[in-house]
Structures are given as C-alpha cells and as structure tokens.
Image 1 (cartoon, rainbow, N blue to C red):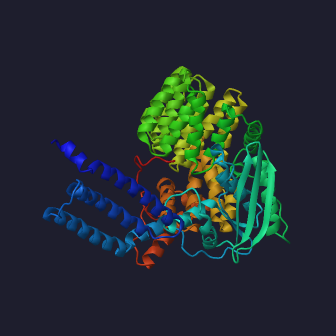
Image 2 (image 1 turned 90 degrees about the vertical axis):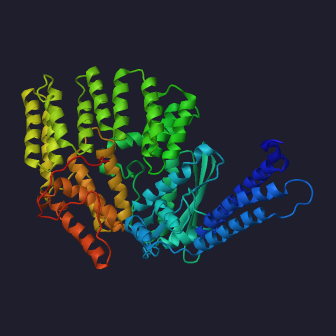
Length: 624
C-alpha cells in the first residue's frame, strides 16, 4: 500500500482539515473577546501556542487510531503525545507569567505612548468618537471617520472648547492592549473617552443614502452616562451637515459663553496656513461634486480621493477609491500614479515599482511620463533616478521653471545643498530670463538650507536683478520676496515665515493636538506638496514640531526634529529670536532623563550643544 493510501485510510487529511477549521474558528472567537471585552493579550498568545502544538497531536492520534477496530496505545504514540503535552505546559506557564520587558516599555513611553491617566481637561472638554456608517453602503465607509474629523475641526475652532480627536482615542485604545482597529467598541467608548480627560463625548451614526443622509449625534456626560443633547441633521451635503451639528453641539457646551463658529469655507486648518482662495475653490469643487454625485463619475471620485488624502491614515480608503476609478477607466494613468504614491507611503516597494512602470506605459504625454515618474521616484527617496527623469522632462520642455524647482528639491531632501547649487549654476547663464532668475532663487535656497544667509540674500538679489534688467515685474518680485522672507526670519518684530501666527498662539496655550494639525497642514503646503522646497518654512516646521512633540509627551520625536534643525542651522540659531532656544530645549530633555536615571535621549539628528564647533553634513536620510 502506498503512503498516500495509508494516510487516506487513517483519515489523516480529514483530521487535518477538520482541525484547521476548528482552530480558525477558535482564534476568531478568542480574538473577538480580546478586542472587545478586555481579555488579556496573553490569552491569545497561549491559544496560538496550544493550537500549534495540538495540530501534530491530532495527526499522531489519527495515525495510530484512524483505522476501524480497536487499537492499543503504543509506546511511541504515548512518548510523542507526552512530549507535546510537556511543551504545552511549559509554554503556557512561560507566557502566562512572563513579565513585561521594562526596557521595551520605557522605549515606547519615550516615543509615542500616552499616559494612562490624563489630567482633567476642564468643564468645556469633549471627545469626538468615530461615527458609525449605518447606511449599508460600503463606498460610504469613509463618512464615519471623515465626519468625526470635520466635527473635531469645527468644534476646536470655537476657541473655547478642549476637543479630543478620534486619533487620540485610538491611541488610548491601543495602549490598552487592543490590536489595530478602525472602530472603538461601543462598550469601551465611555471608558476610553474618560481616560482622555474629557468630561463629555460625542458619538453618533450616519443613516440614509448618498442623496439623503441623516446625521445623528449624541452629547453624553461622562460622569454619569446621561445624554445631554441629541441632534439630527438631514441633507446631501456632508459639509453642511457637519457645520449644522457642530453649531448645535457647541451651543450646548458653550452656554453663557460668547463664541463664533468659523464659516464653512474657512474652517480647515490647511486654509489657515496658506492661500485661502485656492482652498475655497477646492472646497467649492468638492461640495459641487458631492451634490452631483454620479457613481460612474471620475471627477467625483478624484475629489473623494483628494479629500481622503488630506486625512492622515486614510490611505487604504483612497487606494480603494482609485482602484474603482481604474475599474471604470483601465487606462487612467493619473489613478495608477497616485496608487504608486500610496504604495510608496505604505512601504510596498515591489508594488510601487510595478505601478511606476505601468504609469509610464499608460501616460501618452512624453513630458508627463518623465515628470510624473520623477515625482514618484523622488517620493520613494530614489533621488538620482528622479533627477534623471526631471532632466529628460527638461529636454522635452527646456523652458519649464517648475522642473528646476523639482530638481533642486531632490538635492535638498537628500541634504545635498552643494549638489543643488552645482546643478543650478548651469542654468544661471540661461538665455531665457525666467530660467536664469529661477536658478538664482534656487541657489539662494541651497545657501539658506545650510544657514548661509548672507550668500542666500545675495543670490536672491541676483534673481531680482534679472527682473529689473528684463523689465519683468514678476521675476523682480520673486527675488525680492525671497529675500524679505529670509530677512524676516532674523527680525523679532516680523515673524519667521508665512506659517500662520495661530500656531504660535496655540503653543502658548498648550493646545498641542490642534497645533500639530496646523503644523502638518503647513508641512503639506511648503514641504510635501510644494515644487519649491522653502528652507525657511522647512526649518521653522522642524522647530514647531519639536515644540508640539514636547507638549504631547514625545521626547524622542522632539529630539529628532530639534537635532535636524541644529545640524543645519546650529551656528546661526542664536540670530533667530523665535528659534534660538532649540539647543536649550534639547538640553532640558536630556537633563530630565538623566535625573530619572535613564540613558540620555539620542536621535540620528543629534547635534552638539550651542557653542560647540559645527561639523560638515554629508548625505543623510531623506527630508520629508
């Protein structure tokens, strides 16, 4: 009899199939109780161990007893089963009694952990939970977290409420031992919201259809669980629904206090940091597209992707929306390119490479092939390949100044300002005035990146002189504006950059989470989505992020940002009033850790203390 026939006769395959099916069902059940009922994570670990050891035990029993008739327990069988039982006992004991590694726990506390007990945020504090999509339409799943984000922003901008975002509640849930999840279990909602320090919480659901939505929201007192207010709004415009419900909830929380809700087109943190007219135009487009929703409309779907990309952590939803676009229009090169960017963000290198090649195949415009591929390669930190793509695009459009911005950006993101100057010097003698002026501007940016402000202002002056010589007011203004922003950096009475003063005010008020939203929005405008990488804005954002991370109790993250700033501008920070305390803040973090008997905080961007000699900077990790 062959081995296969013997295995089949002893029912080995049937036993394996039944066991694996039962094991899968058991793991699902145990995982549910761990995630939703506060069971210890160790229960899941022990279950995995027992299931793994139980599989060979089941096969051994089937081998010795799978045939018909009575079989005696043999010595070999007993020895094998006893060995597995001993391993199961030892493993269960070790897993159930293992102590938490204090070093690992300390490392987590030093980076991103939120304290288990949070201070009371005061009378007018509220935690906003993710809303539940009860429409039954999977394509509207983004509305739950999206509505919560919009309500959080609207309520925060009353100016007198302390608002806890859904993101912080998820962090508290993860700190409680729960795995990554898109929902906060209803039975844990009040406990998690209370731990955030808020006194009230908002939670609700979205009902109806895309053409007729109903938004239900409840304001709950966390001290006794009573419902303070219940609000409902109907309509097809999600922005108007969020505005209406936020206004009504704020009126309940702010009784007796003067306040004013921000107007709908002016409520986004992004708008507070940049060009308001452009964001108003964008929001108007999204509202118009939503009101004319067509399931097969590519324009509407692209608007949806734009909105999802503005919300941190929504990459999966944006990816699904892009895949739907490709299903409708398989040759849509833009959708493929944006999918490649999401793959890069998620660290899927193989998928990103495949999508980049596919994008280049689908895109028919030669210029867009080179420029688009360059941006994707740059986003993946493959800077030399990106530069080559931009050079090919310049061959197609030799007078395109935006390509110079992109070329210079690849060098600055790789911390190679000297390379940027060398590349731009070749264009500084161009016969095309716009190219010549732009090259001088970018040479100035490269000098400013290193803190060589005098050389930067001189280069900006040369750019301005081109405009004067050619009677081109636009070129003259660009050079003058760059110099003014740099001079403003050194002037305590003029501020340090185009970043809105609200960020500095929020820092003074210790409103860390709201300040971080504004800083991230500024980073998108001036760093991540800008063709020209502005050194003043980039380094100011580093400082602001350090301050915010300090407020949020993340010393390692603060040290990393301060370290980068000191590496570039360590010898000139004393001349910049708003940023001059960077070294002192780093020293204070170090001293606090030493006082606690902990190792000093180190980061890849650490720099010597103020006054120490500055070392030359070579190639470092990409700046993004």
